[in-house]
Image 1 (cartoon, chains in turn yellow, green):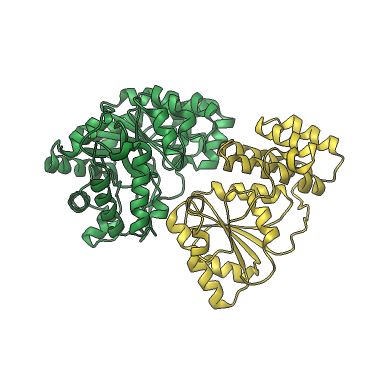
Image 2 (image 1 turned 90 degrees about the vertical axis):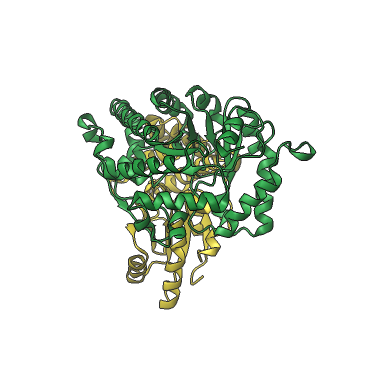
Length: 222
Length: 343
């Protein structure tokens, strides 16, 4: 499992008052405060993503993991950040430092909340990604190979979907496709050993841990 | 004691002859009959035979007449996606937020999938009478929208359209009560009221108290039989008082401190739980016995406890030998009075 780089309040670990303020604004669903924090920061959009939004979403994710917040808080925080990014950037990508091609998918399932939460975090951190939506294992492998994906993020709510990751891993290995797999979702939270069982490189307990997973994963094949 | 006597005694917060065991098995019946999961759920008689065989095989204390949650999604216009190795899953959400203003609840009698469940419950009641509790299942008005709208669109509705949210709770509440009462009339003794969104892990308790709890109070009052609220692996501790206020009699609990849950519920709610079904797939004999003992030690004292899994459905991947071991362990270790001052 990914281990967190943030814990407690944002200010405890980040020495970053804007991140702490933003965390509070997001939980309170205060759009005006969010605008003010951005304006006061004096940061460029990309720096604001990396230094304020990403840490704030990470702390909110950690607080959900500890039982201090609800998934509804996590969702609305992410949605507010997404709205803010669209407003500030007007649809342009802020081009963060992640140079590998990242893709995000749900395996054979129409429960898409987890994928959307991960998407919020990636967008909030300024990381662009391919959104594959709901796909089957074979189609997912085909797209990963076609798009030369370096890191594949898979969200799963149901156990059978989680177990399907093994099919994806084996197929990619047979094809010699060098792609890291990061998984998350309820089955992986309930059984911390499951991500290894299905051949993933890392498992995330929260959507926001995906940033740390990207940082931890070295280049190349698992 | 019969299973019914055992369950009624513990539900009265007294100690029966042993800890009751609910193996909430819906999928394993297909394997008992050598059928695919899709074929198994296509006929009521399959489920009847599957449940009766599992009752005999495992010696547990309930009939679980649940087919799959997506039958309710089907009733609202959705679809079901069958899998070879897991519960049938709801397809794309059938309801759009803008349609809620003119939405009309489906009638139970007009839904072939729901009628199959009722047929199974009638036949099961004929077979077991009142010796074994037959558990029916409904999705709560507050949690059903995850399948109706999709979770993200549902959260958008809660935050952006409280007017439509209120209307949806009324529509869903009416449907839920009708569906529950049809099951009770057909033969179910009690209703499992699935409400995973009641868990603070999922929804801010402030929102649950605004929408979910009032819907539960109204709906449970309209259900003409006992209910057990199940949070489907979600923790319940911060909302125990709210659950008590809904009028429910039992709570199915998830991954949390069972000692603390039992203490919070003692004398008010019977606790159902909380074996980890995902980990159960790979338990050996020692791990199985340890898990059963741990749960009994934590929560069985004084009654008010039913040993079960934490999700309300045991995964297809759990082997039959493990289920048999759980049954044997409860019979060996769960006898009252519990030895050594356990619990």
